[in-house]
Amino acid sequence: MTSTPVRTRIAPSPTGDPHVGTAYMALFNWVFARHHGGQFVLRIEDTDQARSTAESEQAIYDALNWLGLDWDEGPNVGGDHGPYRQSERKSTYQTHVQQLLDDGNAFYCFCTKERLDAVRAEQQASKQTTRYDGHCCHLEANEVARRRADGEAHVVRMRVPEAGECTFTDRLRGDITIPFSQIDMQVLVKADGMPTYHLAVVVDDHLMGISHILRGEEWLNSVPKHKLLYEYFGWPMPKLIHLPLLRNPDQSKLSKRKNPTSVTYYRDMGYLPEALTNYLSMMGWSMPNEAEIFSRQEMVEAFDIDRMTTGGPIFDQTKLSWLNGQYLRRLDASEYAQRVQDWMLNADKLAQLVPLVQERAERLSDLLPLVNYLMGNLGELTEEDFSHKSLQRPEVLAILHHTLSAFDDMRQWQREDLFTLCQQLAGAMELKFRDFLFPLFIATSGRAVSLPLFDSWMFLGADLSRARLRGALDALGASNKERKRLDKAYQALLPLSSGH
Ligand code: GLU
Image (cartoon, rainbow, N blue to C red; front, side, top):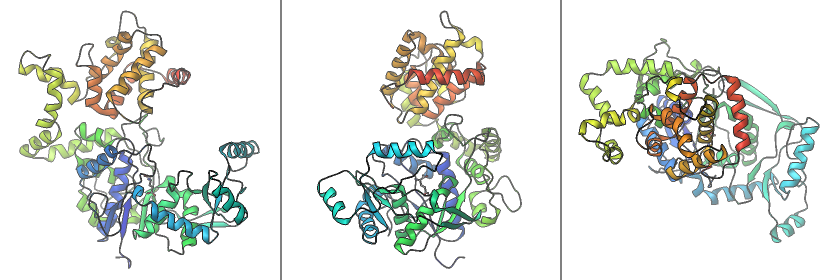
């Protein structure tokens, strides 16, 4: 046991689908807290008001609940350190930024976007680190007061020493040193008065009594800014544990472009939550006895941070499916039946399907053949399946590729947006709408005549729909060269205006 109470947290942003990366962070924070008899806090980072949505916040709760990772404090359960939504903590950030300004550790900056762009371009041209050049750093107090009184747009930036370096310790990597010359005078408060992540994360982690920060390694470079802020406030910094990022099988950072990344996808495909958490446990960690199949509780008991590695773990669906199969075989028949019911054979899911099939069925038994592609994987598709009277292979590839690219860029998954998007793409590609939709029907349902395409996509959700289009491109044997060319062609079609 450590002497201070162990308190960990995750701080996901409620934008888009709940990501497996969030589940991964949640798992390790949860295990770490439970192992040490501490608490696990859920904080919602919704300072980006334009992108944050209530549905996305709810989807985070649903995903964590499904995975069985319970939190002790959070927006929906309360706690002594609330509010737990950053959008509700504005006055706290204001008080703290005022303190930094009063102490001379932060300053008002009036630089325009044009000026900042020009500075960046110059720095890039002379191969320097791109960062704020300190233009407003030493403005006289009366000038600042006058310009603020005149209503001139401004942000607040933190001061960064001109010389020297910052050394901090990451529990998995040891001491890391970064010269201050590489650290930007970070914006702490945006022109709209909202705090940036860097201010909010420091203030919240301190006020919420967080003892250990376990988060993704992409934040390592931000630590010097955070450490300075802790010093300016005179607060001790929590211990840092930066976990390796999950990777696609080709070693690139796990991304929805290449892999389904939403927890919802794995739930809807019929993975068991305990298999998914078991699999995520093995991303950078292993049991002392090297067991591959173990429960969350066994992990909590055996957890030892020294068994973590920093090499990028590969999130491989084939391996996950194997593991899931092992879990399925261990269920007794009644439990198995219960899981199938929880998954999709239940009244709620049927209620979503009935409106789609009622008009089309002649017997109740027509239900399954009509909806099977919505409930399970498609069989293997072949190039033959895509043959069409007026579309040639290059057009078919382009339709699938461009629609997939546009799906990747979508922030919300709404029927009308999907429809408009397809209309725009068909228009931009000078194809008849009907013809344009044909390969998408095949890719999604495996057949040319199926339930309405847009309803199917809504039922499947973004990740599963994307997976179908990716599968079709693979079935057609799209080569890397073809894909590169298609990327360029898609860029040339932009911008598409709706749903982005
Ligand atoms: N919102 C950030 C993220 O989800 C939080 C990073 C952190 O844990 O400090 O990546």
